[in-house]
View: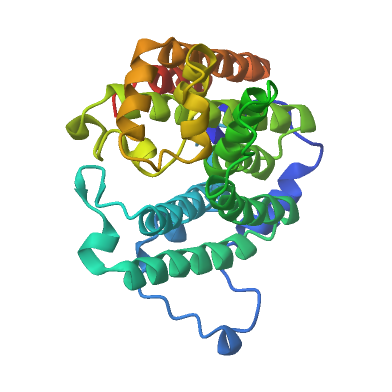
Amino acid sequence: MSRATSVAPKMVGWEKNCISLEEAFNKPIAPMGIMSDVNPDLSLLSSKSMPANIASAVPGEPIAVLGTQRRLAEIVELIHTASLLHDDVIDHAETRRGMPSANVFSGNKLSILAGDYMLGRASVYLARLRHPEVIELMAEVISELVKGELFQLQNTSTDYHSPEYLKKSLDYYLQKTYLKSASLISKSCRSAAVLGGATPEVAEAAYIYGKHMGLAFQLIDDVLDYTGSNEEIGKPANADLELGLATAPVFYAWEEFPELGPMIARKFSEPGDALKARELVHCSNGIQKTRDLAQNFCNIAKDAIQIFPDTEARAGLEEVLNKVLTRKK
C-alpha cells in the first residue's frame, strides 16, 4: 500500500511534516531517564537503521517506502501476533499454523503476558511516529479487537423463529468479522497512505481496500473450516462449530434448513449438534454463497484502488485479492 500510494496525489506541503517526523520516529518523546527504555530486541528492528526517506537515487523518481511506513508494518505485526496469542487462550486452541500453539507450549499465563507485552511495545512505537491520526487509528484497532472477542462470546438473539433473525445474525456476524479481522487491515492500510502524505481521496480508497479485503479473508477462512483438512489449514477443521460459533456458511445454510435455528441459538451445545450442522452446511449452498460474498467484497476492494496510478505495486494489491479467494490455508 505504501508503494502503491507513493505516486498517487498528495497533500500540499506533506514533505515538510514527513521529514520532521522521520528524523524523530526512533527517538523517545519523554526523557530517556523517565522512559528507562531498555529493550533488548530494539536493535533487531529493521527500520531502526533505515534512512528517513527511502528514495530513489534518480531525481524525480517517487519515494517507495518511508521509514515510518516500515515501522508501521512492524507495529501491525506486533498487534496481530498479540491478538493470535490471546485468541488461542480464549479458544483453548492446541495448534497454530500446524505447530503447537503458544498456550500449549508455554501455558496460558505466559501467552497472555507475551501478548500484553507486544501491545505495550506497539503502543510505544506508535506514539513515536508522532502522527495524531495514525495513533488514533491504530489505538482504535486494539480496542476493536477486544470488542470483536466480546461480540463472539454472545448471541445476537434467542428469537430464532423471527423472520428478521437471520438477517440480523448475518449482519452481526459481519460486524464481528470487521472488528476481529478487517479493522486491523483497513486502518493500517489507511495509516500507510496517510504517513505518505496521501490526499483524503487516496487515503479513503486505501481504507476501503483494506476493509473489504479483510472481510473477504475471514469469509474464506470460514469456508476452509468446512472444506480444508487439518494439515492444510494448520489447525483442526470444524473448530468453529465445536466452539459454538456460527459463521456465514451456517447462516446461509439456515435459509434452506430451518432446523439449524435452534442449534445456532444454543451454540451447538447438545450432543450431535456440531456434526449435524456440518452435514447440513455441506448439503446446502452455504459454502458457495459465502464464496460469492467474498468475491463481491474483493471486487469492491479492487474497484477502490483504481484511482491509484497503474503501477506494479497496485498490481500487487490486486494479486493479494486473488490469493485471498484461492488460498487453501
